[in-house]
Image 1 (tube, one colour):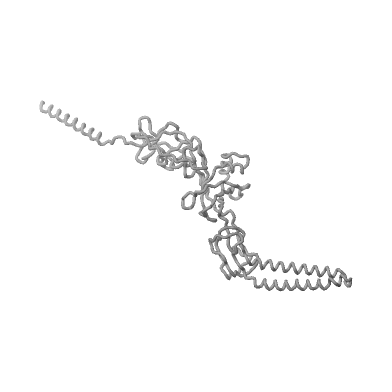
Image 2 (image 1 turned 135 degrees about the vertical axis):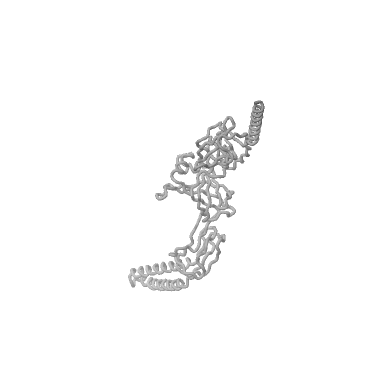
Amino acid sequence: MKKRSLAGALAALLMIISCGKKEDQAAQAAPPPMPFPVQAIVKQDALVFEEYTANLEGQQNVEIRPKVNGFIQKIYVDEGQQVRKGQLLFKLETQTLNQDAAAAKANVTAAQVEVDRLKPLVDRKIISSVQLETAKARLAQAKAAYSGVAANIGFGTITSPVNGVIGSLPYKEGSLVSATNEQPLTTVSDTKGMRAYFSMNEKQLIDFSRRFNGATLQEKLKNAPAVSLLLVDGSEYEQKGRLQTVNGLADEATGTSQFRADFPNPQAILRSGSKGIVRIPIEQKDVILVPQMAVFDMQGKQMIYVVNKDNSVKSKIITTKGTAGLNYIVSEGLEVGETIVTEGASKLKDGMAIVPQPAKAEAAPSPKPDTLATSKTETKTTTVTKK
């Protein structure tokens, strides 16, 4: 009996020791809470940009077309060349017109001879003055015909009507051209000032009208801030532009209204026919901003981890309405005073404990000239894209 009792006691002792080791191993295997950067939710002002795809044109785009038919005898310019107003561009062959002018000139001479012959006869009352008046009318008619032919000869010499840059030259020397050709001889673009044309749909136009002060759209345009232009390489054009005009009527087919923004082009960086993105700065007051890295997608919904009082985390669904820099603008799902995890969402799960660490504060960029100086957060991204 004593042996059995001793064996039982030893077995119980071994079991207790074994359980203690397992508990120690489990305690050692459970990782301690990890540190994660967190941020308290506050409301602040943000400067965001609405973006619209725009077509760029020179302030003057003049199509050069011939007024008379003829073969291109000489082209005096090349594509991309800067030209001055009045500079010679093309010379058309006018041999046939020269022959017509010679014939018209001969008719003028003959009519003048007839007037000179009849005048003294009328003065001596040998013939009626009606004959002289008839001869004078024929002389005027001959002179008009000659002037028309001479003008057509002059149209064979084509000069630039404006200062600008030569576009493409679809016709070569020797080509037969006429006023009815589908393509012009070339296009001269005055690119010292560039015009960016873009469109807003009806909803965007209503938002624009409510956002800026003014009794008319023209007054609202004057009160709108300076706009910027993104180039096709992703860089921002160094010159600011201003909104200048908007169509009074919406396009019935698309429901859009066309706007125009003007940009100076002193260094000829912008080219007529190219594209860009017009960016209109919009100040938003008292909005909630969260880092984009803090937000993750799950089944098509945007979610974020909120830190509870016991330092455990819980995921919440949020609704965003665009971006401001590297932040999302949150319209629903978060309240002021809550704390969120700003990085490492992929490593978290609901109920997991963390060690909150203050997120590193990023230096706010200095406000640029002609932008809203009262904004606290400036962005170079978009809230609305219209293409």
